[in-house]
Length: 288
Image 1 (cartoon, rainbow, N blue to C red):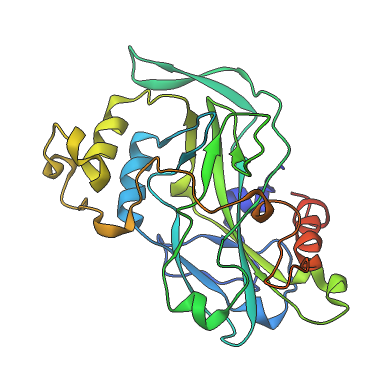
Image 2: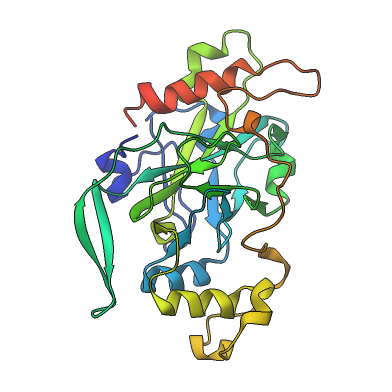
């Protein structure tokens, strides 16, 4: 999916999705008219200082055939939801540009190696707790710690398929689970999308920049056994992650393919049709 110029620049924001304080959140609505349940939603990126440190070095994320978790973990705090309404939280990834890169070790920089490889069909990751009421989402830090990245084009585990040596921008979508029988008529008005420029990254099969490796070891508590440097070397703004950072590779989690497919089943086994309709709105009606 291609990101619109408005989303990429984030300079002109329609009134239907509001921003948190500058430098903390960048949110963009993909339609000028939104239903009240999403029009006041605000999103704040957690671990912002750590994300900025990685962004300054050029964030790299490992992709493997089996799937690898993101570090830093994508976590947000949400406000402005209707406490009694139900919402679905979704993530996807879009290419930053149409280029393929290689790392030049002599200059410690990324160079353009050619045009981008053909992108795999787009997938979306539904948060495992979806759908849930706004009151529940707003009282907790929402973490996408079950999301995994893979470079396996034949993956059938529901992981997000990315091309190695390509740059990607994660996006976060808040979707109102409209219970109305004609909710399909408002599919393009029932969601609000946000992105955070500091979370863009290069997908790699192995870390290229040794400073990225050092920072990940220094800031990830689960990499304690591999530390060879003092965490204070990375400046006063960095700090131990505590319990909010998952290991970069755990045993297979409970996240299943049904969460990234076009539908998601509730406890009664009935498919939420609006999931499919919202995905269609994201991909087609909004020119993504």
